[in-house]
Length: 64
Image 1 (cartoon, rainbow, N blue to C red):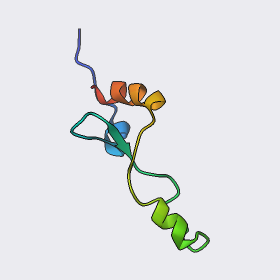
Image 2: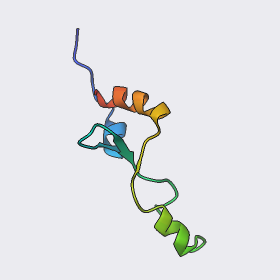
Image 3: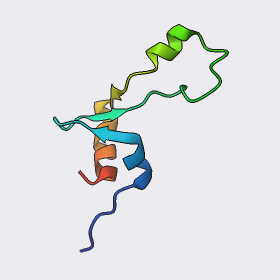
């Protein structure tokens, strides 16, 4: 059976922590900041852990 291929789009968007959790960036923080309050852009800054419901599908895409 051939090797599983990593989904390249998922590999660029997600990062796996040392404990095996998957981190992702928040949406709405690429451009058009004039209409967004500074408080909102600060809140969107940190990476967050992927919800357990989506984690299994992402792990499959990453080949974990």
